[in-house]
Amino acid sequence: MASTEIKTGDYDNFNNAQNTVQTLNKAIAENQKKISNSKTKLSDDSIFAGPISVACNDELSKLDSQITGISTNFSSIQSYLGKAVNNYQEGDKAAITYLSIKDGKIVETNTPPAVLGSGNEIITGLSGNSNQEKVYDYLKKAGFNSAVISGIMANINAESGFQISVDGDGGWSHGLCQWYRGRNDNLHSYCKKNNLKVDSVEGQMAFMMHELNTGYKNSVLEKLKNVPNTKEGAYEAASIWTKYYEIPANTNTQAHNRGKTAQSTYWDIYGNK
Image (cartoon, rainbow, N blue to C red):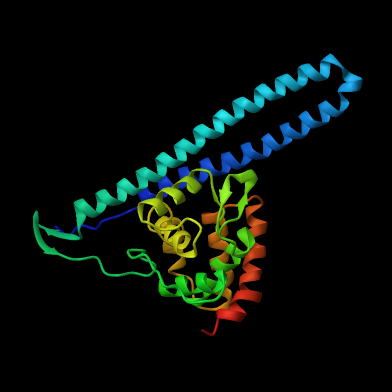
């Protein structure tokens, strides 16, 4: 019997579920904005429409309340999925510990080797005079090549402009990567658990690495490991990050634009480092 091989394909199932919930939540948020706009217009027109306008407004308020409830449930589901991923990974570690089994017997026990972006240690003492410089230092120390760093930084710039305390999506998103709803909750929980400040580069980057090593391992981290350290690789890394980690509206267009930014801006800065 050949030695067993441990596979982690199930992580993709968790990740796909998280992405689906996140996409649905964003769609719900957009519809809530439309409802709010409709209510405002009805209020403005009430002098002409009278009781009909008031009745429509009441019905829209009920619909808005129902949608808010659905969105809250989706956030809870996303949080549960994040916890499931963590538990699944911990189960892997506890049960496997890289055992080599042959003919029904353990013949070798290995410690997993250190890998790119392993995220096993929280990196502190970052150098740099700006958030951008500190983000670069973190990613470099985490082992990413310049192309991947350029792609990630192009996305962070698009999401937050490297502001660590900024909120978006009506207050539902937060931080460098604009973590949304359930992921925002997970960010706060992770930082609290690890005695890190939520609004710090160290705290948010540590959480980013935590996500890459759990729910986003196969869909993002493993893909980034194969990105060549070239200007073309910077475009590829930005596209991967946009499509599978950030997942903004108009994803394909955003992936192209951020890929171009990775090449024209960040590769020019960091490509030769």
